[in-house]
Image (cartoon, rainbow, N blue to C red; front, side, top):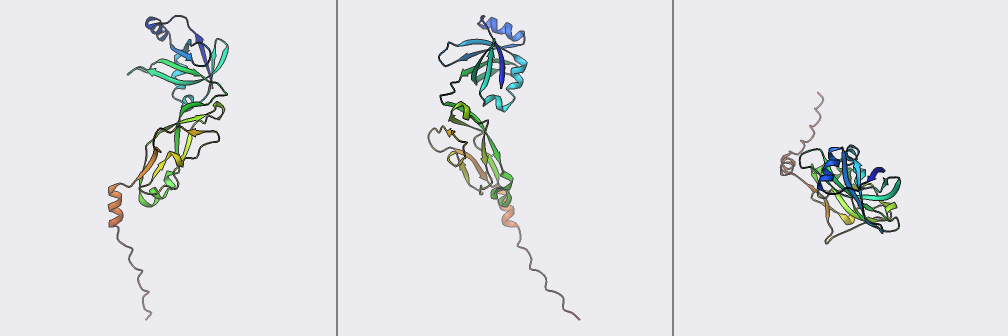
Length: 207
C-alpha cells in the first residue's frame, strides 16, 4: 500500500495547527539508521486509510518527495470528538530484521462449533489482536482463529492457534486466552427442562 507524504520544515504547535486548517496532518518517520523526518499527509486520505484494517498491519510504501521507504504505522492521535487525525507516527522497516507488530484476529466457524450448535453457547472474544514477530515479507494481514472444534465451557489459548510460516506469537507471561465458550444460565435451564420425547404410539389394532 502506497502513502504519499511531503517533508515539512515548520514544527511546533502553531505550525501543526496551520497544517490541520489547510487539510493536512503532521507526522513523523523514525527508526533505522537515518534521522527522523517530519512529514505532512493529506488528512482525508489518511483518515479513510485508517478505517481500513490492512493499513494498520501492513508494510507501507511511504513516498516522501519522491523517495520511497518501507514503514509501519506505529501510532496516531485523533481529536476527542471531531473527525480529525491530529498526528501519525511511522517506523522504518529493515526487510532483513524481524518486526514486532499487532495484527487483528479473525474468528471463523463459531456457528458450526459443538459449543454453539449443541449447547447454545456464546463465544466471547477475549483478544481482538495479537502481538507477533516475523520478517516484513512474512507479515500477515490477520491471524485466523478457527472455532469449529470448541466445546461448551472450553477456552482457546494462543498456543492452539495456527500461524503462517515464519510468524510466531510474542507471548508475555502465561499462555493467553483468545476465546471462551460460555453457556448462558437461561440456555442451561431450558435444556434441563426440555421434556424427553414421548414414545411412539403403538399401531392401532386391525378390526
